[in-house]
Amino acid sequence: MPHAGSLAPKERAYLQDALQMENLCIAKCGVYADQCQDQAMKSLLSDVARSKRYHANQLKRLIGQPADAAPGRQYQ
Image 1: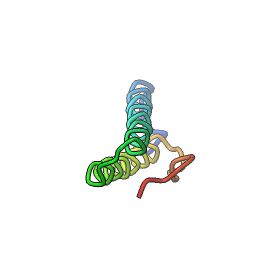
Image 2: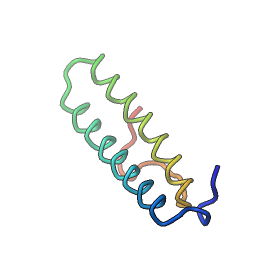
Image 3: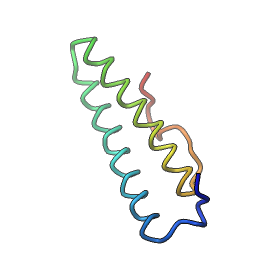
Image 4: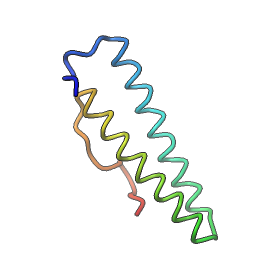
């Protein structure tokens, strides 16, 4: 895995954009899960949010930010 200091500025920018997209997806899945009446769909959206949180943490590690839980609520 590349070290955060070894990333070119353009690489860092791509990773930051990807992190923003992952965080947006996490937020949307949370909103949609809250609106679902169907438990299977709610569970699926929660699983997607969890997967996206993992991806976001991986991107944070690459960028050199501390990987942590999502600010706000957690979807389980």
